[in-house]
Image (cartoon, rainbow, N blue to C red; front, top):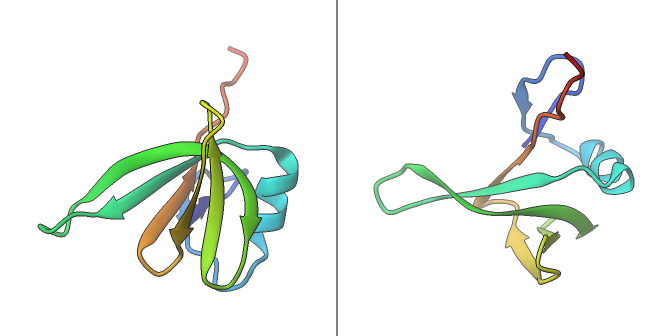
Length: 84
């Protein structure tokens, strides 16, 4: 899932359309996975390094990289700060 830049609504991409944009823009992506009670919990955040039809590789702020299964994971971009 990712957030539309214009509406800030979380969307679940059915294709790869959102991943190249997020990866090239170096946008911070939050990683959420469902726990045993069916509640989504925050796991990590970072930038998209690689993506495929099965997984997304995220590099976190510490520099560590990890692959996440797209079927089991929700991805959400962080809302960029706005000038107020």
